[in-house]
Amino acid sequence: MHLDELHGPDDLRRLTYEELDQLAAEIRAFIVKAVSHTGGHLGSNLGAVELTIALHRVFDSPNDIVLWDTGHQTYPHKILTGRAGGFDRLRQAGGLSGYPNRAESEHDWIENSHASTVLAYAHGMTTALELQHSSRRVVAVIGDGSLTGGMAYEGLNNLGLSGNRVVIVLNDNGRSYAPTRSLLTESITRLRLDPRFTRQRARLGRALTSMPVVGNWAERSLESAEAAVREYLEPPPFFEQLGIRYTGPLDGHDVKELEWALSHAVEWDGPIVVHVLTQKGRGYPPAEADDEKRLHDVSGFDPDTGKSVTGPSGPSYTATFSEALVRAAADDERIVAITAAMPGSTGLLPFQERFPDRFLDVGIAEQHAVTTATGMAMMGLRPVVAVYSTFLTRAFDQVNLDLGLHGQPVVLCVDRAGVTGDDGASHHGVLDLALLTKVPGMTVFTPSSTAELEVMLDEALSIIDGPIAIRWPKTPGPEVGDDEVGSGLSARRVRAGDGSVAILAVGKMLGAATEAATLLAEQGISATVWDVRVAKPLDVVMLEDAADHDLVVTVEDGIRLGGVGSQAAVALGDLVESHRAPPTLVLGLPDAYLPQGKPDRILAELGLDGAGVAAAVTKALAPAVPAS
Image 1 (cartoon, rainbow, N blue to C red):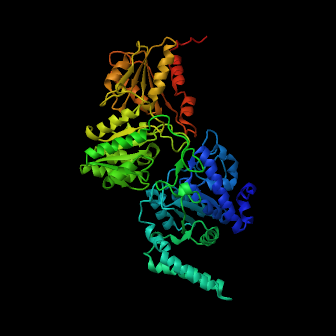
Image 2 (cartoon, rainbow, N blue to C red; image 1 turned 90 degrees about the vertical axis):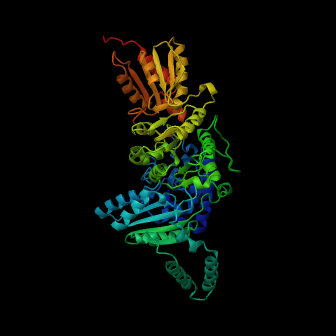
């Protein structure tokens, strides 16, 4: 077992190419076994094994700087840099991160898990190295999916203008979460994938290498001729028009070929793209056969079959949204759906299958998605943009000044809002409430159950004339009856108290609020509980009722500063003119980057479960103790 003897990148250089192939197989088996227990990103990592081996044989990390875009493909990198022993706690609280992490290893430079950023990092780093007259080398690995993002084009443009020395590895597997939506790579791979060209090259290669004396020389000449043919037959490569040298495409699963190409590319005096073709899910049949996303981001599964062995314990918000949107679109031809390269994860695959002409995947380009939707709305359509909360924040300028300023009826369906769990700081959706509620004219729905989500989506598409956001969590929703669902822009009073404390719960935090009310009742404190339902505009009836209590408590799974609770406190102050407004206790997420862990555990540690809310209320109601 070569993997057992591997302690760092230097150990790779003593292995033969045959041994490296064996190591690649061992790494794949290791990743499948580890991810089957913990969950994680599977397909992209299986496809990047040989590429990672070649990179660490050519570059001297961490002296040379190896950068990864999004980090979905860095499990082999973690293994090769001495972290194989931590994979039993991958993505667990206090365990190994699912992305590059500067606190884990000197080999990790950037902690990015949002796509399309790596070329900007590379531009900044190479500029600094040029000014420092340093000989250190920079290599940036970016996927074809990430290359559809606007920042990637900006990075290419600036690297081309600067002429800085950087090796850009384009890891082209034809997919992000979904098949890559771009014409960029089609022309530069067409010849490589043409079976007639491949057969002719193989036949000629065998003939030349069998020739005595000149065989090896002739084979190398063939490689040069092939490059010339590509230059002649294909359109001028996109990259070279930006001042960036291009080479490839190469077999991303041939370590020897990759090593040869990277060794030559690093000598180029300027930016150069090494185009590498890889197979997402390589070596694991269930992933290779998964047409939707090559088992991209998975929970625990049976390694023999690839089938999930865990499932949600309640109704899924995403599945509910998916079904409700298809029903609504069947009755209204104006409805269109937009995704930023995530149709499966956001629940839009059924819509795409049913209404392909009304479905749009813009690639990893959230800013473009929002403004495109605004243009559609201006022409009479009813666009729905399905996006994760953490990714929507990338497009806040467009939400504010393109969508909001023009007051168009676009529905932002914000999935994975609040504390999401295993993917850590970059994936928690903590900012959407604070940001969206600041957009003038924006209506913000916060369903506390999947049944509420159905009602809110229907009303957003049929009644409200202006920008709308509906945000929901990754965790399953509760089972509720018809009498536990509200309507319109009204809040819903869930429990009536005696006037001592009113708890205003936002979205999924209704569960913690009702549990807190039960615990408080055991202490003789009778609490009123409201399901806020609409974070903007706040229901005046709810506020008037809350103003008649001794204490108002707000609970939300968004950042506390500037969130819904802060706005409720201001609104109560404005509402109460004749007498002093009751004190407001605002409970929410701290101004901090939250670590990875299970959502319920993180919320409990932050005092945002039932026991924590009850304790906060008890403390706030306790009489002040005079100082001695």
